[in-house]
Structure formats: structure tokens, C-alpha cells
Image 1 (cartoon, rainbow, N blue to C red):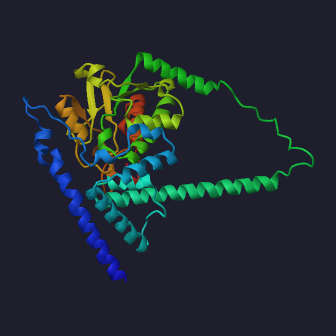
Image 2: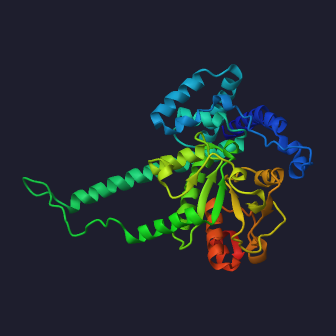
Image 3: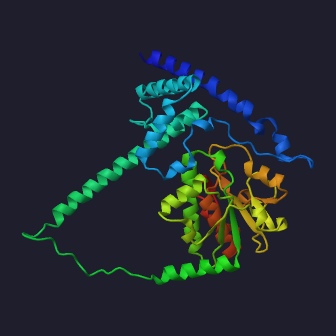
Length: 379
């Protein structure tokens, strides 16, 4: 029985691989013209490739504001009107899911229609496996939260017995603190930086190169970086450039806030950074360049690429900076850190923390303390 399952799994993976990887390989401009992209000629204008992976069957960006039930209803309508080729691929993915479930691998117990639609748009079996692990983690978090909530309710019912004939009297010892002085002090510092600088730009022009869960993770990282920036005595003025209303990251951020981002202490604009600053002041921070950032300069405007590059191996930020003829720089990680095996990837909140600390101390040893210790052997 196990051998039959393994043969079926290999056969299904082979069918899905041949039906999905060839369009990606043929439609990828980066893989065929990597040298032209990195070093374009003067008379050639580089065009970054847009994903061609079945955009017609994705839900619209405005559906991020819908509830989970409304998303599932919209996904069911999309799945019901698939063409024969797409329906055949969906059947193969479902068969692949059954094989993985019978093999007792990490797959979710239940998959919603919106999740099937997302699986249909993923290009390879390895990307689907990563999405399965993401769904498994989400299920476990929900179950853990429900168990903790039930446990707290049980303890509360046991410890606070209600008196006969009335409600339990509430304690008025602890009063809420309004107009927190520390919060007012931080907001005053951020407001001062919004008027007088220095500025740091987050480029959100890579929305089409990320998945939905990557956009959600990016929104969380941006909030963590903004929170750390606000705690600094001289914070940055954070500017989110190329942030259109249909940008998924911006919609996830507004969903986390519960209100419009206009009330937050940063600037969100649809304009490009070339329309806001002169080109000679801009420095794009990218790990694919050879130029090392030696020290922080108040005269420069640093740009951070807003994307999750865990599943992206192509130098998108470096290619865009080369196209726009902008200076590039990278952190001197190899000069101060001895790395473990693996990629030298830093999250957006870690990059912002390093920039804030470097601006304050102008010392790389102090700034690079924000690199997680699990990634390095020693500092």
C-alpha cells in the first residue's frame, strides 16, 4: 500500500511539474536576460517582469476587506467557472493533497475554497508544500487560542463566584491612564521628524512578485519596524512610496490598524521616490551590490525594498536601482559577523532597526546587534 502511494505521489508531482514549471521558465525575463538586467545598456530601458501565473483566477485586491465567509463564496464562484485545463490541474492538486494526507505529512485537516484557489496559482509542488505548512501553523494557532480562551473562562468562573441575587462587584482600584506622557513624547518626536527629517523610504513596488501570505508578513514587519523607530529619540520619517490603493501590503496594514493609515505617524503616497527627492541623494539598500555602506550620512535618503524575498532568488531591488541609475549600498555584514550556513537574509524590521541604531550610535558593532544570534556563529 505504501509503495502504491509513493508511486502515485511521484506520478502526480511529475505531471504537475511538467504542467506548471514550463510556463514559468518560458515567461521569465530574468532567467534569460540576467546579464542584460544587471548591466543594461544606455539605450535600453529595463522592464521588470510581471508574474504571468494565472492572474485571471485570483481574487481581486479589494476582497481583502471581505470576511472569511464572503471570500469562500467568491472563491467557490471562481472555482466553479474554471476552464478544462485549470480544472484538470485542480484535480491533480487535490489528488496530491490526498497522497500527502495519507502519508501523514504536515497538511491541514480542512482546506477552504479560498485556499484551493491560492494553491491553484502556486507554480511548483515545493511552493504548495510551504503553503500547506503555513495553513497547518494557522490551524494550530487557532486551536491553541480557543483552548486558552476556554481555560481562562473556566478559571474565571471558579475563582470569582457571583453573589446571590446580583452581579459581582467590580474593583475600582486600578484606573486607566489617559494621555500617557511617554506616548505623547514619542508622538512629538515622530511629528518633529516628519517636518524636518531625516527620511527613510520603503519601496512597495514589488507587490506583484509576492504571495498573499508574504504581503501579510511584510505588513507585520513594517509595523514592528515603525514601533521601534518611534521609540528612538530622533526617529526617521518613514515614507511608503509606490503605495497605491490596490496594494495588498497597504490593505493588510490598514486591516491591522482598524482605521485609515492617514492617522498613523508615517507618510503613505502613490508617488515614486524619484518624484519626491533628487536622484543624487538616493541610496538603494540591496544585498546584491558590491558597494559597502561605511557610515550613515544625513545627506542621503536610504531606500529599503519592501518585499519578502524568502521565495525570490532574483536581484529585483538591484535591477531596479540599476535601471533608474541610483546609487546602491549594502550592510558590511561579512566585516563584523561570522555567518552560519544559509542565506544572509534580513527582514524589513531588522533593516529598519539597524538603520535607526546606526544613525544614533554611528557604530556598526552596535547596530548589527539586531541580527538574530541564530544566524551567526559570533559577532
